[in-house]
Image 1 (cartoon, rainbow, N blue to C red):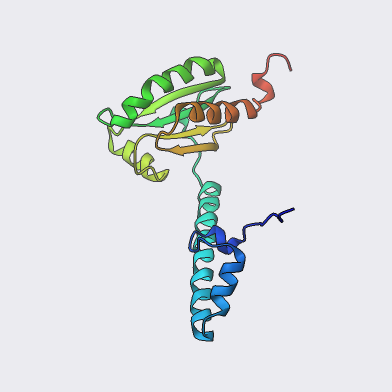
Image 2 (cartoon, rainbow, N blue to C red):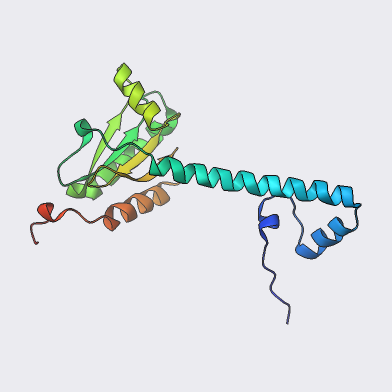
Amino acid sequence: MPQARLSSPVQSTGLFKMDGERLQSHLFGQSAQKRLAVLFVILCAAWMHLSVLAGAVQAAAKSPGLPKQYQVPCQQVLLVFYNPWCGVCQKADPYVDSLKRELGSRASVRRLQIQTPEDMGFWKQWGVTGTPTFILFNHKGQAVYRQDGFGPPAEFRRDVLAKVNNQKPPVACNPHG
């Protein structure tokens, strides 16, 4: 029976497209100086991956809340950052409209485009650099989901609905207690 091989962090960096045995043979068939250089590259790649992950976690933790003018009592809010001349935004529009109907009273969908300097400030505050960008805020005004760009419509719908359905409304908003 063949043994299953688990990929290591070294292999998952994408720097090496070889299994563990070939990597080990390649490393140990080299001089000590070359081995150190290869290990240094591997460690740098791993550090970069961890830095990117840590940055994303930090950014999410420091994200500003939803400004009052966009809050809707007892509803979550999906902000859609878009531009009317953006082709991808135009492609996403019918799917966003369909999702808005499906969400009903559980979430409000608000489209934002740059019209004033305040809008630009809000875009910068959220790190929005391209359109479309989707950010879902829970009932407390905290960001719980973000998607930059628009991928497969079915995945977008599934991801947003999962996040909306996973958030519990405050007791004051629940008529059944």
